[in-house]
Image (cartoon, rainbow, N blue to C red; front, side, top):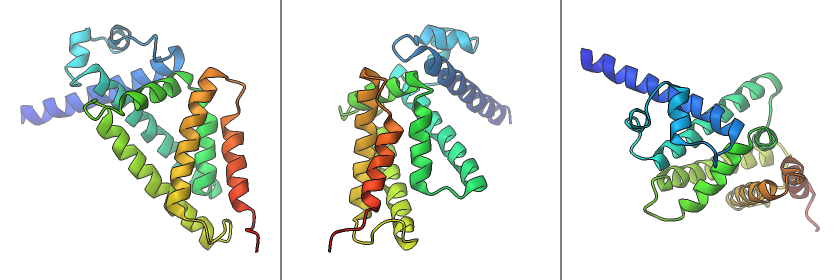
Length: 198
């Protein structure tokens, strides 16, 4: 019985750490977010913080997982109110990313590091990319059924292109914040919506 309570407390502490880390990194940036600062934010030592994660890299991958969870909840809430399409929800998330530059920086750096098959964040990115492509392809099929996108588009190919566009824009935006990521994604979607030449 005590074990179960201890396990639940551990899960709750992990969630507390991830929520605090989201705020610290969004505010101060990934480069300046030390394990010590994250530990201080939740009243733990550095060793105490890393007790809940196998490594610093795993901690940061879990921060990104938490960010995705929060973004999905935001999209779902907006969708319930306004009947947003997947594509509109995606543009909204990209627009929101401007408000959390530290998390964008973390994503860009960690995704590059995760190209190493041994990196602790590799499983997170493998799963994230697969899930995004599936979700986006389904959203594109829905848009095709509704007549919002041409039926001759390959949903899987367009989903992969959307992911590549978003990731590339994030890198460019970190280097030049005048780039409007959401406007570029919207522009790409508008190109897809144009009728094909006969």
